[in-house]
Every structure is written in structure tokens, then in C-alpha cells.
Image (cartoon, rainbow, N blue to C red):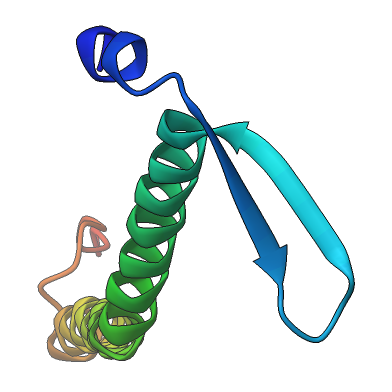
Length: 93
């Protein structure tokens, strides 16, 4: 990147068509700006395309947690109703 910047230091005029605005910067600046903009655009598209998969994964994880909690509660209720809980039986004289 440093060698590219050193070799491409000559000024380039860039005009924004609908406006009467001309920017005169070294060529490497425009190339770097283009690279950064391309990277940012690609990262945004990748992030947006993965958002739906991440949302589904979070929903499945939450559903799995709810089912796991409900299963544990039902098992505990079954133990209590059959008398196999942690309490000791009463002693009758």
C-alpha cells in the first residue's frame, strides 16, 4: 500500500457531474476511498444477509430453553405426585 501510494502521487481531477465541484487529490487517495467503500458495502450486505439466519437461530435457542425448562418442571411434578420426591416418609407409631 505504501509503494502504491508513492508511485501514484500525481494529482487527479474528479468532478461530480451534476455539481460544479472539482476535487484535485492524488490518485492513491481515490483508490483507497474506493477500496474502503467496497469493503464497507460488502460487509453490510453480508451482515444483512446473515440477519435472518441469526434471528432463526435465536428463536430456536429460546424455544429449546423453554422446552427444557418445561420438561424439568414436569419431571419434578411427576416425582412429587408418585411419592418419590426428596421428602422422607412419615413414621407412624
